[in-house]
Length: 148
Image (cartoon, rainbow, N blue to C red; front, side):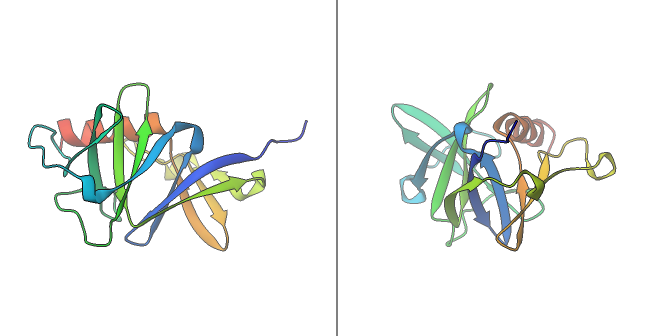
């Protein structure tokens, strides 16, 4: 049986390339609609989309939560997990079809960190991208907020 190509959203921030399955992405929004929200721990604020409020998070290259929005982070990628909807602020967002299953490498056990949201690495257009999932990342964010 032949592997079917999969669509991914690729977001970039601070030199990091991070991919999520397109099926878990709700929308791409601009950060100019960002509102201050002190009641959402760990977030830099929230955006209102389709009568819902999504917390917006900014990450450092080490995946630590950042408290301010860098000037070059102009987009928010809205992501839905089983437990929450959240948005990640980023510099760029694009959609990519991954049709070469050999390019995707699951993380070896020795590379997996207990709290890491990363599941695989992908060689894409001569660059290395990290692959995550909505559920893995929401779990990571919830742990960062509860136990900073």
